[in-house]
Length: 95
Length: 494
Image 1 (cartoon, rainbow over the protein chains, first blue to last red):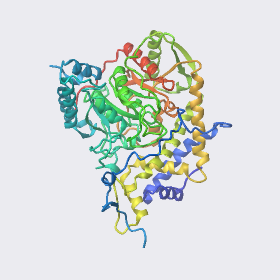
Image 2: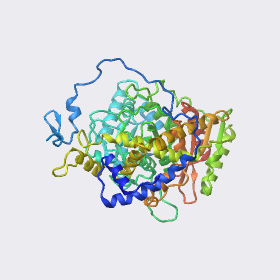
Image 3: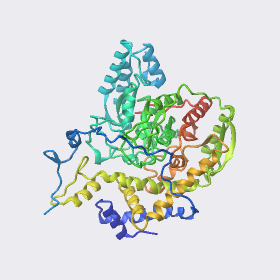
Image 4: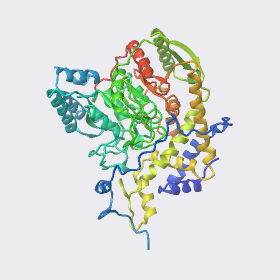
């Protein structure tokens, strides 16, 4: 499988990363180089092999359903690039 | 007068505890060295006042007769991937420039509780993505080492924990934290002639560590010898309910358990790690390592890890896939950079912010990850890679039938020059060839110095152990350390 410039632009869009025309051109070669190299995984016979989900066997814990945290609004907002009152500020999304 | 930069973790801890010197003296001496080593660019932020405050607290505790922690009085460097409350944490990215956490990572909190103090936040590859520390937004870290050809070419300190490795090798700090996703503790340790261990996945909490690839990320110590690594790992590790993959197990007494007598231990030598065309210095060092372990009483056995060649390509699917998901959080809304072009809507703001905030390698990996996870490609790439990962882990399981530990080189070469491997991302990725398999299998693995190559640069030997058997890994590391006679140091040119 190889990618063309349209595909690169589509991946950039899905990644929410703005990309210039020149960058897209450069990325075509780089991504194809990397993808051609990872293609070799296709040679491996994986019949009957389950994809790994946990590297060290561990059980998923459930914690008690109680409030252990909270009341930290100012801390949550402390690093917001734009805040309005006690809210995160974003550009207008509804006309 | 004591040159405190020459003291290691154990010596500082013991000297402070016995009253031979004050913790404050050590902190002040190392603060001075850090401030004088700007040319290495190892630190993003220096925090001399925090180092002194932690030392004063230890001195006060001692004067009051209170019990002292495992790292009492030891000033360390903190990789700038660990969130530190009130101190900027950047992951070496423009995206997080100016980000000041309102909470402390579990690992760093454990270290402060054990009496360590912070000299500053160490530079790294951006979001820990890189093998040479050339992807940092805050500039390259320079290795204190130089080739013996009389030139002064700037060499890579390895990556991603390159600030950590450079600072320890330059004796700016006796120890530092590292994180290892695909070799980021071991390869930099090897490049500068120090030791570092990545413990079993789940030993150290990931809570408060800026995430790269969550199924691989694991914190560990870097220091100048094996004992210091054991001491610091004890202080860092432990169950944390805030990390769902944290192992609910007691922390072993690794330092007390150190024992370099390897009688009864079988050391596997994986034949697939003998790469064609590899530097003969690497082969020679590996053979020396085999001889040292034999001398320590171990039995050497040939083993096979048949899927080794597929580890790197599997890694370069899995790690970018996880990164693309983890790094989706950088949206310019809640924290970090925001780039809002005139008149832009929300979607354009996301795209502009992420283009401006992420460096080239980070953008490349997010895009690879997005591609391999996208509709129509998920099974061909991601599912296949996770199946191959299962086979790589199975290779190790099979090997443990005939051996207790595995010995291999840490990296296929000594440190390379800055800029030498930049042109092609693939050639940089290949530097992780020996480090990545243990990461994919979640196994403890350590690098210890194995000697110098013909350019006079350090090489590392890697010991891989069974899950949860850090003790055997440390013991074999100690056996090598006692026999290698490695005392080389970088000349102080900075």
